[in-house]
Image (cartoon, rainbow over all chains, first blue to last red; front, side, top):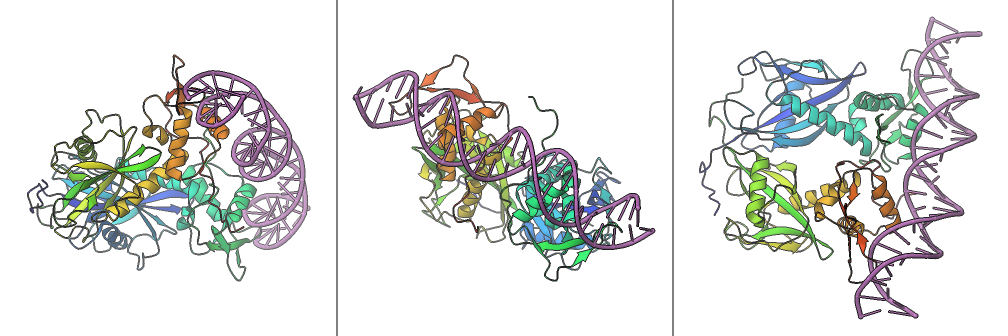
Length: 240
Length: 240
DNA sequence: CCAAAAGTGTTCGATTTACACCCATGC
DNA sequence: GCATGGGTGTAAATCGAACACTTTTGG
């Protein structure tokens, strides 16, 4: 039956592509690199690269994440496999199967070009289209997935620094979903979910808008799923 | 930067693995093949095979599904990418990256060995462990995913024949979740979701248990997501 | 004092749950 | 008749959206 002889089948190159998302100035931003060669010369693309012979896709993704962001420690960042893109014609040069990942960053230091020659930059989520290859699709899939997971997981804290206010957490939801939320109700839902957030021991507080009452600080809790879920407000235009 | 020269990097074999699930006699069953060679000789494994040079992983998965089940038409079956498994040591012979899929079947005809030599068989979900390679993990991931998607999508109808009763639909939920559901409430929730199911035009009915009132027949509707979701009853043992 | 942001309380209606009850069929 | 499974009704509890209100800060 299945011949496992090396090279009996056309070999595939296996790469990872990263949709690295963060929040800057209240807007969703993506880490992109400008292509310096054909095809898609001059287009923006998702950062990524080959999976090395002794790496899993996850390992390769975290290595690329460190290289492209220039961050010293990426071990705490949220990195999650999205899906694999394997259309035969997705790279015109050869057969490339790409495992796509979504990564979520709390703050957004301007990336320092790491090992790679191409400089990476943060761009607004809606800017810079069309991207190279099928990266528009990958990026859209990443945003879909993240938006959906905010509903029933504690993923939102991955966008926040180690200590954050409930207002900042709410902004994550509002920015990714593109909707407004009622602050009192949001607060209650979050605090009613055990393990979602926990108050910082000292009971610290921080001034957010320069004015107003300082907000209490929280840390991410240990829970990973949300019961009950924090559902997106239903889009208008129901077929009632 | 990235050298795209063929064979500049160790090539990977790319395969698909299928977790084909169905309901038989009120229990979840999986399609498995018995391995006829080392490694894992004699162990059960998920069906699967190589992605051919001109195929996407999705195309390869549907081809394998047809071959292994022996079904004439697999075009209507639910097939969904799960994730990709790429640990360097997952196959002791060579580097194999596998894109895993979950497939859902309504009924369970005993598989006729298709193009492949190894005979495929339906086994109860909990039987036949441990499976070959990392297939235990893949299968567990498939069940997790399916169980979760029942909550907020119309996926349950993928386990049902073209015409089904609400009792049968409820059994899908109960079997996959391993819990009991209140029939009157289940019925109302399903019917209150527009596009989940629609009554069969003639208004047919079918006797289910040999006794009792014949149940009305429904078809799968056009909706794909459930609003509001049909949440799993919370496991006992909350930290109240 | 005013504006702004955090935090608390309260109301009202929708949704969920739990259970009682009626209907149609085979034996 | 009675067991079995389908289908309807309903009251109580719960949840969630909406919004008024108080608190704490900077100007």
